[in-house]
Length: 98
Image 1 (cartoon, one colour):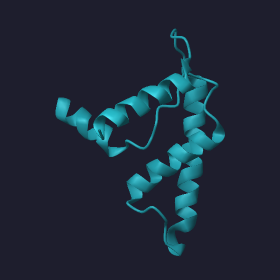
Image 2 (cartoon, one colour; image 1 turned 30 degrees about the vertical axis):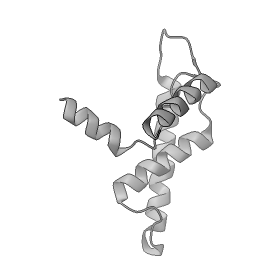
Image 3 (cartoon, one colour; image 1 turned 90 degrees about the vertical axis):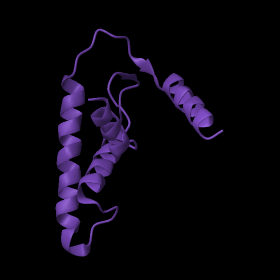
């Protein structure tokens, strides 16, 4: 099971958690996460002209579903502070690449 979790984390490491932040995730952040997801699934960072419409439609659909999900989720935990989470991420990166 641990190997699966490691693989899942590595697979989409550019997609950041967006739930339970103060302030809440913006539409732009959700769109960016949806774009990363579609890029990962398709294996392409930029679609060909032939696939551009399908690619953009997928990004829009996933972004809409993600917004609905984030708006529907509930938690008893206090919202996380964006700056604090970002500082922890920078510290982990500094240690990893030191």
